[in-house]
Image 1: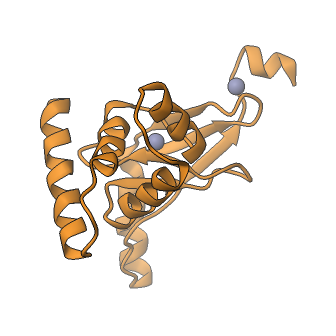
Image 2 (image 1 turned 180 degrees about the horizontal axis):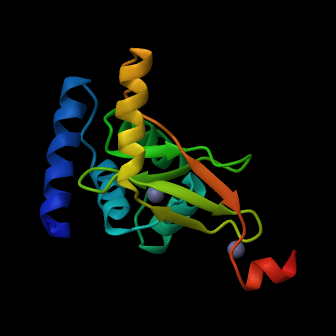
Length: 152
Ligand SMILES: [Zn+2]
Ligand SMILES: [Zn+2]
């Protein structure tokens, strides 16, 4: 596993190249947002990220946060998930393991799992159906055993 610092350097380079290619300005705010995202290991919505940036004393507008998330999705540095009917959630993707999710319907907790059999299914179905599978989404819904289970 690479160190967090190395990963942050690499994603900054990728983002910098992307902004140059798209003739967009390389503002410090955009890079600060990228860095904060790569320091966390969770799933978050745009508003939560905005509040997080404010709490870290960054002077960023809500529009900059939304706009930067859009750019980061476009250059594959983060992924957007649409779980259930909830707000879109984001997470970092570069240098991070492939995984799928379990969502608790009661407390909205997001758990991750990684199972190589899913890759095998993709390979097999691609072969059988003569289909190039480029990506997938798999989300399992339910509730946490214990606290959330007893409440519902
Ligand atoms: Zn729960
Ligand atoms: Zn995840």
